[in-house]
Amino acid sequence: MFGSNTKDTKLNNSSLTAPNDKDSVSTTVIAKGTTIEGKFACLENVRLDGAIHGEVKVDKRFVMGEGSFVHGNIVALNAAIKGKIDGDIHVKEALHLMDSAVIKGNITAKTMIVDEGARYNGVCRIGEPAAFPVSTTATVKEKN
Image (cartoon, rainbow, N blue to C red; front, side):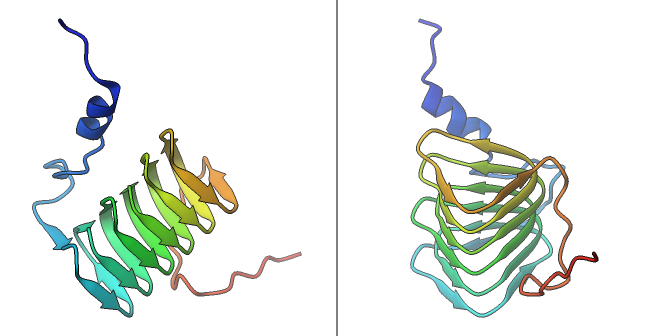
């Protein structure tokens, strides 16, 4: 009687729908069937259901719906992913890889949740907040 479906709870708690009021008052939505080619940057939250071929920088929350696709590196404050990414992802705070997420690239985030069914192939660095790179294509050289 009081039981709940775990999958429904995950979806409700994931903020795949609307962001919290404290996050922002506006969200940019890129609808299914929309393709953006080139660098994409947004100061607010972004909901992607289409595709982006190029670098993505989102100053707040980046949400990718099932069937969405990014070919390029992503930098965001927080992210919830159900789509596919072919590139590196740098998340300053929390990253949530949901059941249909497929990542082919390196991951850097302060915290990460990986749901059953999510897949990633690359180096994963969790624990330190990801620094926002000046350019997501810049090469970083370490001092010896």
